[in-house]
Amino acid sequence: MAETVTKAPRIAAASSEAPRSHPLIHKLLVAVAAGFLVLFVVIPVANIFAQAFSKGVGSYAAVFHAPGPPEGKELAPKERRKLAAARSQAERNWSSIRLSFAIAAIVVPLNVIFGLAASWSLAKFRFKGRTLLLALIDLPFSVSPVIAGLIFVLLFGRHGIFGAWAANLTWPDPFSLSWRGFAQGWWPFGFARSQSGIIFTPLAIALASIFVTFPFVARSLISLMETQGSAQEVAALSLGASGWRTFFTVTLPNVKWALLYGVILCTARAFGEFGAVSVVSGHIDSNDTMPLRIEKLWNDYDNQAAFAMASLLTLLAAVTLVIQLIVERKTGEEAIAPVEGEGALR
Image (cartoon, rainbow, N blue to C red; front, side):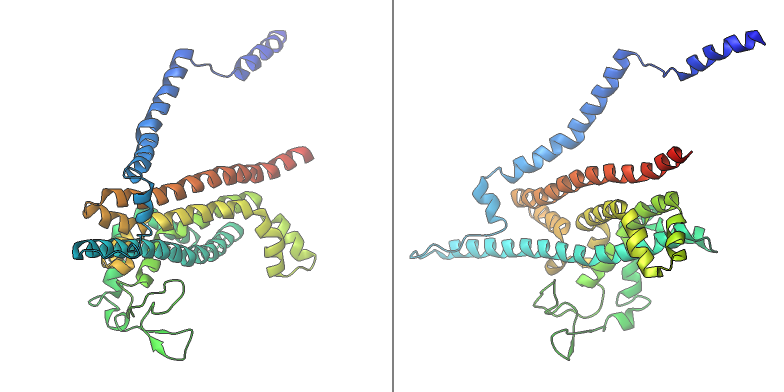
């Protein structure tokens, strides 16, 4: 008995000691990780901005706003054609930026609504088909975006399953009582050309973007809601609060940082999606988002303009990364808080 008592502290002390790595191995691993980041992240990002400003700040600005003809000077026909081409290119570049923001303005709110509804159902309730719903939410992670775009073409294309209906689909004009093709005069697209149907219109781009981005908000909320449980909601309902009031005053404040984290990921993917959008856009200039516009500029060997457009996406990615780090810290604090509170009560 005495022998057992004397050995117990030694065993506890030995088990409490953290394993130590050799200093040389530790430094080698840090150097490999740092070298990998420099080679595959820092250098490519630096190259984007170097190529974007390779012809000067004026040439960079001309990608988005071409200068007008000089006053009081008659230009040669060649110069006029060159200036008109530059202004046309700048307008197409701006059109792709507007369309990217328009798609994000449509996709993100819809995914927030879906993500809140799905996470609430999956985390707070147990029902038949719950596993199937979880699998469907993860489906865009396992399906190639190109295949996702092809699915929409096979469904809503002229020779698709719903082609006869989708090809002639028109939409109500919010500023009049008439019906017209999609996107003519609609905010936030503002296209002058009327487009009927679904495929090869901005509507198809929005549908494809929704498909590839809808898991992000739901997946950001499900785990946190399951960790928090339903005790607070049950208490609010027992005190007479309605379902909506319980949601807006109890549930939503508890998951606000996780929701913001999902919104950030969804927004970044909506801006950067290429595969599915490329399939359903029909390679029409008016349907170009920023990634599609970059591809066309690169294929036209206008490298400086392509890198100038890419620099905007890079800046967006950098801002997203900073916000993501802040939100991850807040989300971690929210997840730890309930555990610390339970430990204090014990």
